[in-house]
Image: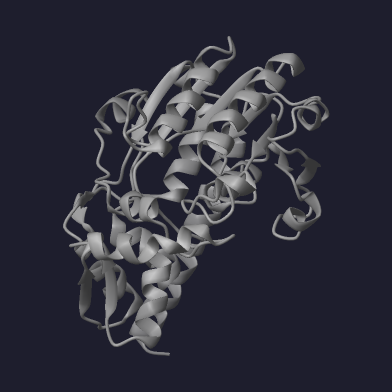
Amino acid sequence: MNALVVRRRLAAIFAHRRRAIARLLPQLRRTDTPLRVAVAGGSGFVGGAIVRELHSRGERVVVLSSRPASAAGHLPDDVETRHADVADPDSLASALEGVDALVISLAFPNSPMEPPRLGHAFEQVDAAGTERLVAAAMAAGVRRIACISGAGAAPYSTRPWFRAKWRAETAVKGSGIAYTIVRPTWLYGPDDVALNRSLGFAKWLPSVPLTGSGRRPLAPVSVDDVAGLVADALRADDARDQLFEIGGPDVLTMRDVVRTALRVAGLRRPLLPAPAALLKLAAWPLRLLPRPPLTPDAVDFVNQPATVDSAPLLARMPRRLTPLAEGLGTYLR
């Protein structure tokens, strides 16, 4: 066996041991009993990452879902599922029975394409759904709430998603329950349907389409970094009654984000920008479909800038934020 092979095998062994130790550290640091944490939206992209992180730390996780049987198929065997529909307040009381902490990570099917007539809209789910969950948490004696909001949430925003997130934040802050609100920027991870969709195009198209010019600034944040922050916040005094904005350490244009993903995935494709106005015009009739593939508002949603100041978070809750290429490398390679 030559020296190069030996070095590679030793490196693989040490890397495996480092990962094993990293998984064990949160449990070794624990000084009290596991929390029973309910995750609303735990079968979605962000909520699913939070469920996995909490489960890896030994917390007792309960996923709240309007379709618990379907959600259970994507979860570890010892994660409990309970029926809960944020449109039905009566279903929420029993769902939160015996729960110590609640994580709110709501998203409606096919988000951000809104069909309000189906009850799938930011105001109906993110805003009103959070308000009902918070009321149920107050009645159930939940002691801690972590809420996933969004960078840009504001009461008088021209965008419905930002107004809905503000309503959600207001409900959480007014609950009297210790809370942490997390406002992430543009999220990426193995289960996202934004960047991964672009990479899907790259596998069978000669170029990768971009919505708009692709020059808006972004600070993409790994969904695992957000999940780790939420898990920490449920136990940290420094996170009590705090609002944290979180973005990745790299500020890039969307063009650069897609180029980085293509490079990490080992693909070479040119980028093809499409004018936003033309896309919105083409999407206008699609909004009438039960499950529209694109809507004018969705074009605006994906074209918005997404940068934040993470310094207040890092000063209060020190942590390492994952560079984009490194985060993508954990699943694209």
